[in-house]
Amino acid sequence: MKHQSLISSDATADEGKKYVIIENHEFNIGEATFLNKDGNEFVFEIHLSGNRKPENYEYMYDVDNNTQELIGLRAKIAVKE
Image 1 (cartoon, rainbow, N blue to C red):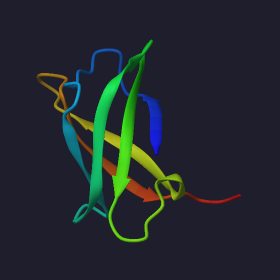
Image 2: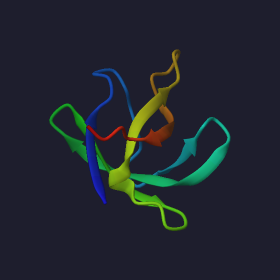
Image 3: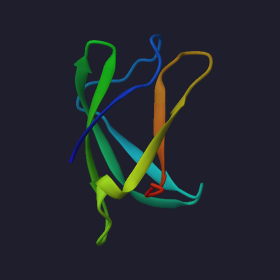
């Protein structure tokens, strides 16, 4: 699934690099491959393990405060209204 989001105007990521996706700060549930930037938004291809569906999650981003480089992603189950 492709996922597009604004992270930070100063954030950087390497095209083609795979970033780990963590759930509940301990479980590695998949990876996000950084594809490119679309304007100010970052575009990722999300792959989750098992029967998890990427569209059922909300994603947050961990960025190094000193370098502004993307470190990884955190996921949590999206709340359905």
